[in-house]
Length: 108
Length: 151
Image 1: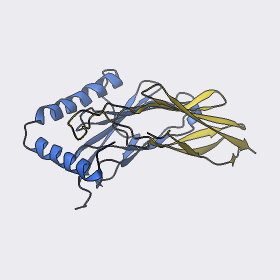
Image 2 (image 1 turned 180 degrees about the vertical axis):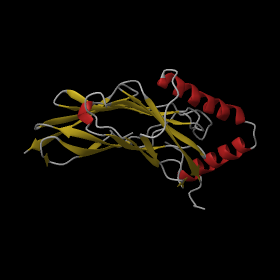
Image 3 (image 1 turned 90 degrees about the horizontal axis):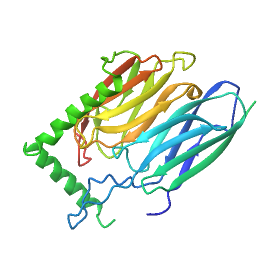
Image 4 (image 1 turned 30 degrees about the horizontal axis):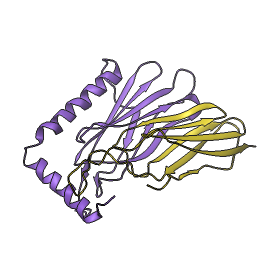
């Protein structure tokens, strides 16, 4: 599988205290562990099992993920920004890999 | 992956036919019971109320592989009025767990959207727990037309 590529969309600037919407997507097959290959063997489970979003070190939103989440998991959620800073997004794979992305926002 | 789309569709259609014969009705039933048990665990023995939590899901999902769902809880997300967690369950999947969202005051609003898998027509259930321990529930039935031909 190609290395999962995270994509995050959020506004570049906001006013203090504004609630912004953040959209995240990561390319991942999210193999459920329920499917079988052409020889009838079960394809082992490999999914992203945890997603979290931090702003300046404090957790804003996180999610425990089960195999019932679609391939290329998409999450849309909101955050209240009081100051300029950096959003850090983390996806944790079943195999222990961690995929990260960072986005900055300016508060006017 | 050496399984193409045609095979995948054939397999899933076969699985549905198999389930429809009633032979594998037991696991599906167990899943509905599992879902009830998980709600009870999550709510800490209390019966969840309805109202504040809204689960949005399509009435008919043509493709059970990616069904958009969103949850919204009517909450100020400040002081004591904070949603801590929202759990999503599907009572007809092989495993009822779908996802659990953890919110915080910094979330600003208790709303989240994602895309999920549905094995067949079933109920999608969302349960929310507030900071004070109150729980809310909402349920939607989603009809899944596997094969993607609509109708």
